[in-house]
Image 1 (tube, rainbow, N blue to C red):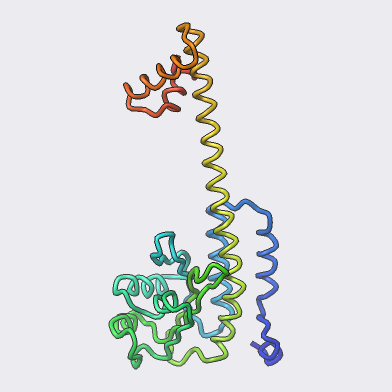
Image 2 (spheres, rainbow, N blue to C red):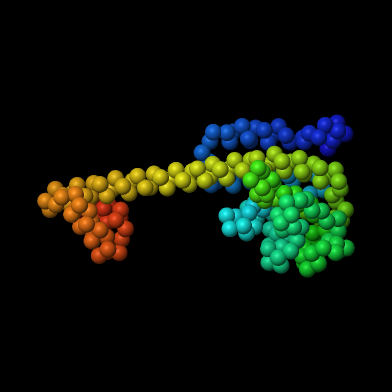
Length: 243
């Protein structure tokens, strides 16, 4: 990062993040698009600081458990998996305290001794982890790993923190659109099922001379008899195969 960039607090990749945010605005994202956003964040995080050997994003799931949702390679996934299995490590501490964590050398680090010993065996020597924070709190963390000790310093902490501020907005937007997409799909399915049941009741009323309530009771009986939902039983009646 140049002296001018450091003094202004600007990241060299601010422009790319701004473009991604603009593209996301007003879009109904698919799961693949959410994954693509995370992959882009990892890619940009890995190129923002030159000493990075691997980068990744961990997000908190609905039940509060952490999951590595995107990683640049096996080095990151293996290091993260060790944290989840051992229940300790810099990324987990970042999530718990919503604060950045830095390890200059895992071979001399006194915190998280079990993870540091295991990570050293996989080639990791230095770590920097920064929280992804929105108005709803800590959503996850960006972490970068290096294979040389002392790879990251205070300026790198500042750079990654600035990057995380922008990335957190992208992650929050992606999750919001994903929820909207899921709810929209559920609503469409509900309307489809309702229409099937209405058509099936009409079919039974016309075929068997039933009133609406009796037709619905007949449909429920058919569903129970065949171990199917009312909508599935309705589809059997109103589709050509069902008839």
